[in-house]
Length: 199
Image (cartoon, rainbow, N blue to C red):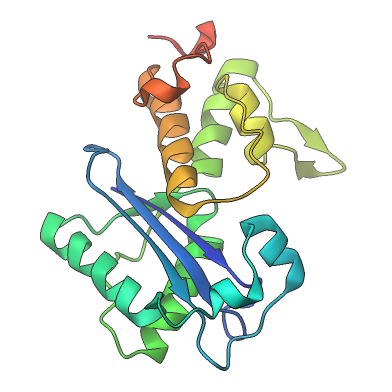
């Protein structure tokens, strides 16, 4: 499966655009894709999103960057080459693939991913409840967002700026710890895996 992450200029896939695309094959992490890309002329910019991404208005409109169409075409080419059409990630279906689908339609590209996706929250919730017998619920809502999931698997992410490929690696590491009880990236070996996840 491919861990997918996109960074965007806002939260609305019909108004905002993609400014970074990251992908990483979970079973073969050396197979990855990363591109920064430029917004279309009609794409709107939310200043709060730029703060999260650490980019400026000038950067996200830089004509020297790949277009979103070019970046997605390259990503889709890798997915086709690997014959791996299963997307995964944190809220991947509710956010990242929503943006990718909107751009696929806009640029008349062929969407490669299958209908179902592998959501980190669902997997983490299942494992968390299996271990602790209940989910962390507050006012009827789960508190198992990404920060709590990272805590659950023994990781920390103190970066203030989001990067699509780095988030793919973080999510892949999290999934590996939940599914296999081991880490896959040496950069995270400084963070011990909790005993309840080890196999």
